[in-house]
Length: 168
Image 1: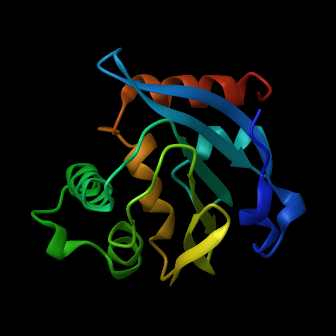
Image 2: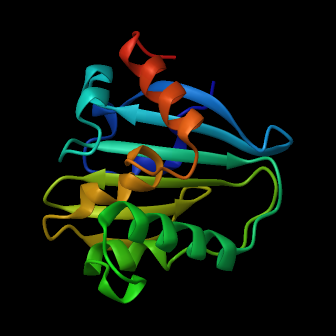
């Protein structure tokens, strides 16, 4: 089980979020990308994952990743899920975070933290990479993993099912 670690220690209410799900992320059933975790104040909030509820999605990498690839994936998945024509049309707080990824090595962890009406933040290994002011659309960033066309449908289903069945 992954612990919340330093990333939430810097959040406004670190004791409010708990790990509700943990899933290995494999792409094409061959490539182990890493371990994804979902953190919520109440695991039942998984039913409202795309609403303005506090949440954190974390990914501990099992392989090296280029920041440029993560940026492209985040932007493309958001464009697909929000029904907009290009990344140039992304709401400011979503573009702010989607474009903040950096190169990372195996064993490193990215944490995306959302605090409604406050901020959307990206951490790498507990260190803040960027913080974007929530202007009312920050929760939509989680469409990357939980939208109609998520990055990985099986990951979405397994994280939500695990959270709704009482947590990891």
